[in-house]
Length: 126
Image (cartoon, rainbow, N blue to C red; front, side, top):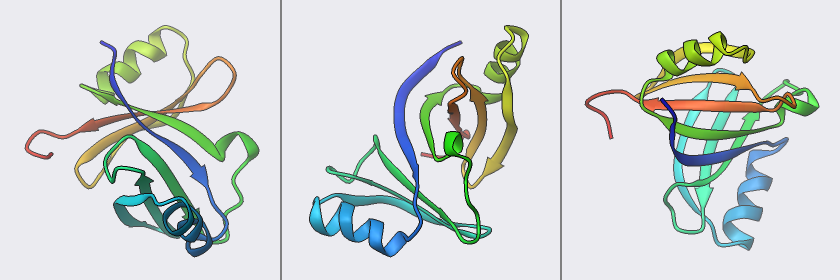
């Protein structure tokens, strides 16, 4: 069990419109995907309009801890199995596997405390 591909780096942003103006209007990035979350929105952008990209993450009234303002994400074959293997190896699980749209996602901490997203596309989805 291992990661298959680099997907994105997350940046927690204070103002989505301002961030989109910077990344898309000024730098020329294109939107890959956009979807709502309970208190905000996630928009992923890249120069090509395809992954990998930068995930702009905005949640109203939420101030992320400094170490949660950034994460890296990897595609995996089986999120739940990999989380269990990592837990067995002593890795700290920050967020247990959960489903959102067509993905199964979990977050673990690397040795320095950074968040690492493990992202599995569910069968029958892109």
